[in-house]
Image 1 (cartoon, rainbow, N blue to C red):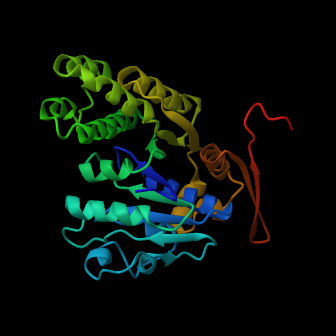
Image 2 (image 1 turned 90 degrees about the vertical axis):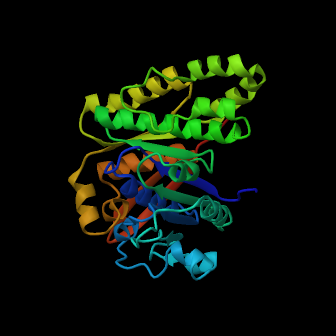
Length: 324
């Protein structure tokens, strides 16, 4: 199936690191820059993304896709922000987080058929197969972490689980090889016990002909990384440390998109149910986020708020080699 929209899945192994806040503001920033954006709550069974947009009770959610068989257009909720629409998750009804594989595929098909320039999918925490499959539906995905070591290690585990899930699906008709990547829930203490190098060695012992395809899957797996709640220069190193860790043990090149500083401005915006990029586009967290959007879209984005109005300046970056 061809995908017309750019899908950006935002995941992470640990809850409470600010995925929903960052996803919301990424969507807002891209919408303000002129893109048609759909923000989707992918935390099934524990939805809260609507509150960050100032919506108390979403009229529809993903359950309506199955129960009431609503069309995709019917699930799109207006946000009051130009170019930005929102889709709520299944809600908090009992069992709504337990989605069977058939429904997962229906949701993925639904996502890929949405008419938008960019779709941002905010995922729940953890490394369940559902979360990993939604994370892997598009090449451009983002993993978030806070600077604390426990969060960095959880993020490493999430990245490995997502990669091994891709490999597992490729090897699903070869059980002897598939069991080699059955490590979707690694503990914090086993970073060195199962690496990509060891995987390659074990695959070669069973079927050397699969090495080339496995290497191709690994080479194409290039998630972006954002470090949230940075407080000092030491915290800034968390991103570089994670990039090095993932390269060493997984042979994966992470794209370090940037960081967002710890700020009361962000907490205040959450309490007031107003995205911080709209509340104060010239604050330091907003500047950080605009730089991240620039990395994702290859543009220079600048927002200024005057007299209650936001003015947007966007310049496309020219690749090196062009004369200007």
